[in-house]
Length: 90
Image 1 (cartoon, one colour):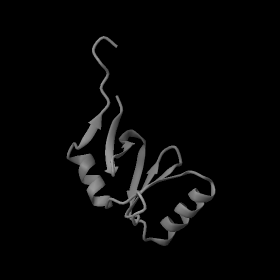
Image 2 (tube, one colour):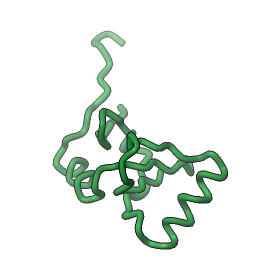
Image 3 (cartoon, helix red, strand yellow):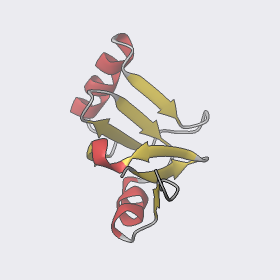
Image 4 (cartoon, helix red, strand yellow):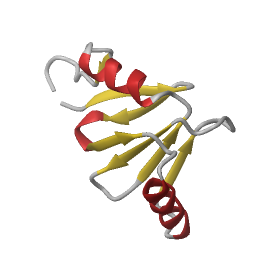
């Protein structure tokens, strides 16, 4: 069963695919984001706002979020995760 976390503005990410949630200010992270943009492996979920968190997925995709990394981590640990439930009988 897949669990999803809200990363801001109604955008959701599968928690089972998350490898890391990091601050975008470090130079290595900036290079990683730039490389992902060049390879078209980036998902920009900031809605035009400043990037506050970079989410690295196991599929080698990078997700940009306007929500602080601490907030995303808290949502994951506090159970603010949305579960995809299948109807009975399936």
